Length: 115
Length: 116
Image (cartoon, rainbow over all chains, first blue to last red; front, side, top):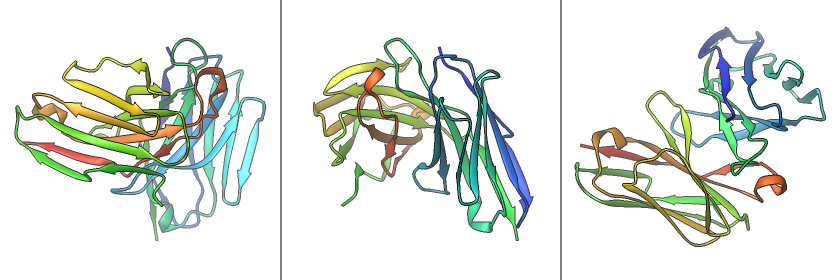
């Protein structure tokens, strides 16, 4: 089945610096890769996603890159701000079988942005 | 107006009790899920329902029984609660499943279950 590895588990940056979170997946049939942000005590919320026919996607300060050959994808946050502090989860869709279409999540990265 | 709503938000109960968590979505989605988030923040799928039918039942003790009376509701009943059941339980919904899935999940606000 699908396995998603996420690194690092914690990340601390200074305000204004960039932050990069990386994920790898095992299911070569996966074709959808979302990123969720979870603030303390709140629900995970989708911040950006990418499908397998695209190599990169940007939304203001957030970008995601996908390397299908290597089966890894990354989240890039530029010009970080204190409000970016949260736990970030990557996920990959299950590509086949009875669970096809469901999401498997990485273990999360706790990002701290210091003012 | 809440898209995916869960009740209760907090639940404190004693070991051995039976409790239920309710989830409703008004997005018109036909697939609903229960995820468990432990103290280390790991999100693990428990169940997935599509149009009231069970699609996924991960390795979850049979003390956990989901019930979907219609595609807008997915409730979770837990029998004989144990200390290890303490966690935050998230309901989520999405449109479609399998090859027809559009993948975007909307999560509920979570239910923090504490077993004492």
